[in-house]
Image 1 (cartoon, rainbow, N blue to C red):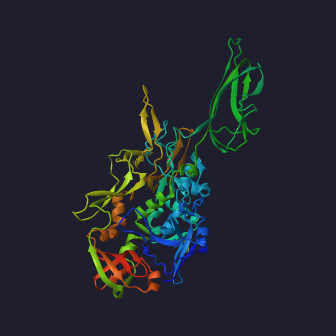
Image 2: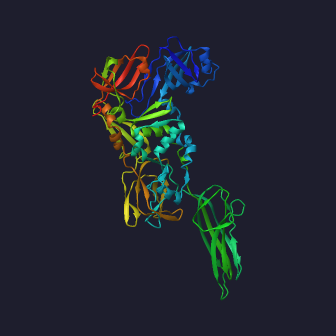
Image 3: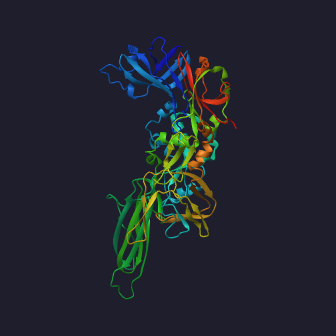
Length: 604
């Protein structure tokens, strides 16, 4: 067997008749939470001048080479075949030789995301869904089904309806959600990979949302400017306009530093000075404001651009002197930045959630930059079959305890109350000789609460139910019936979108505005509990690990076929009278061995 090893485009010196043992696998079924890689066992490289140069002087005492701490690109050729492409080499130790391993497969794909977060990696992409939260953007998300984000209404343990009208649905304590498929696709696109798989047509994938993890503090707005001004007037029988000379930094007017939507909350009064002469006391006034010198219609909410200047005035008609007063609060409404708030969401955590919840095995083609995702059904029920009877040399061992599973293999969510488990599920194995229970997967997201809100007012004569996603703690205030809503930090939730076609009123206490809309979108937990996941996506996987039989065998396979091995196929052996799949296969110059796993009731 002729071995060639290339690192960063340079062919390394190898020992004559170097024998490398290779292990191939696409995913070790013995451990559901992980996704493994193809790899070579440790082997030696001579410490020749050429190899020392490629490894940047590694092993020379004065060397500052960082080769052991990075993942240099590698290609391994066997008998002229490209065997491991887009691989990487790891130098384990150095004495008179280099002790190395080579890895490929999904580990190469995951290497691109190592220690990276969605907010960091997709920073430029996420700007297209960053937005300012105001009534217009919330209502637009109800009507526009092409958006990748939407405000899905639920009970986030905040104030669900306006204080002033319990028939108006309140947006102040609602957070947006983004499609999981959007993030999944953007991650692959950014990495330069395409992907395919039948799962992309399933509603469990296309209608799967993840919530924005930041609950707005109180109302989510930020006070931009706050001040009270008094102006004296003394023009009996006259008409005048007066400015209040609000400013923020010495210039006339209030200069806006950042583009956004601002709410204008003001209270203006005017009064005459005492004593008022007999027959006098006439007073009329009107408050208004200008933007960049032009008067605009009074609105409680306005879009302002950076460097805009807003001034406040009043018109007065009177026959005596007096005082006008205005108290002004300008708030910048909440900016929703997925770029910023997804800074702690690791890409590897997100991908593993998608893989585990959908029961996916990624088959990586690093050369063509493609990932083919197989469901458990496609791997263990509908896979293409090959007859390998002629390749089986011997059955070396038969065993029945597969992987690290228990009798009750738990799939879990996180919970606000650690004692809860209402959304968990399990995969059961009928084997009394293994441990009783083990957690095999825990999502990074949180479960919904146990109870549904019994009454959610849609209109004055229509109620419904809303799922409780706990983003706030309700805190009673001393001596008052008023509640304070304390945000809980970094809570991600999964949701399904449910559309209700009904004329509803949607509004905001903070923004002091409301509007009717003909549709509203709710978020709920339909088909997201782990018992659904286990039943839907792991029933064929269960046929493998329940009453499991594993054969360690010796095979005799021609090298060209071995090097082009397709691990996604199911194999049939006359000697076993069974259908199996290869969990892993190892080979070198001398021998080929494999771990075969029986598929119970294949295609039944």
